[in-house]
Amino acid sequence: MIEKVNLRDQVLHYLQQELVHGRIRHGDRLSLASMERVLQVSVTPVREALTQLERTGVVLAIPNRGFFLAPNTVEDAREIYPVIANLEVMAVEGSTFTAADIRRLRGLRTAFKRAKDPAAAVRADQNLHDALIGNFENTCAKRLIADLKLRVFSYELQYMVDGHKTSTSDKAHGEIIDHLAAGERRKAANRLKAHWKESLELTVKMLSEPRKSTSQ
Picture 1 (cartoon, rainbow, N blue to C red):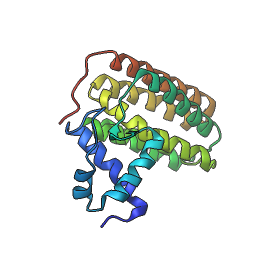
Picture 2: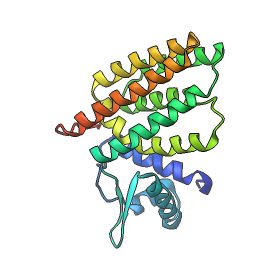
Picture 3: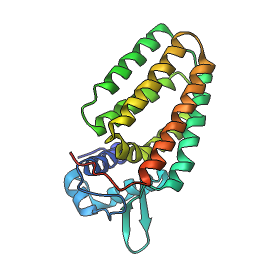
Picture 4: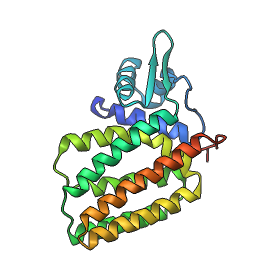
């Protein structure tokens, strides 16, 4: 039985895996019965977990119809990406980075480059960004970023299918880390902001093109 405190994360992981393997698509109605069976919990806590995820924008609750996986839209992307960018920039500018931090960041960059599928690439990318803000002492800001990243996962998964996104992100990661290694936090923050702008532009382009399958 899954502990209630972890249920939201378990439901989120379930939805991400269903999305990765093409078993659900954005806009699809979610089956509480399937989640009850797979997660081995009753419908009530599953519904509570989905209500929590609704607050992050991952799912939509429609009265008398149920829960649906939120669609990816240009409008939402234009709202979400700049907020994450500004919060991460603030975090980098307000943090210090040791030699050990730089080594860890380089290791996470390598893990990103070696990711074998789009879902692994998204998680590796998020791990690296988490490390960039890890030393920041503003817990509220980090919590906001974490909630927004739950929503961003589905956008990034959709365009990580394109290898160009991986190479573009890796180049940006390398430049950000190099600036931090040189003690140039402001330059690192500026490059980070530009990186999020590039990601938004790619996202808008991707959402304007015919949909690609994310199934493996």
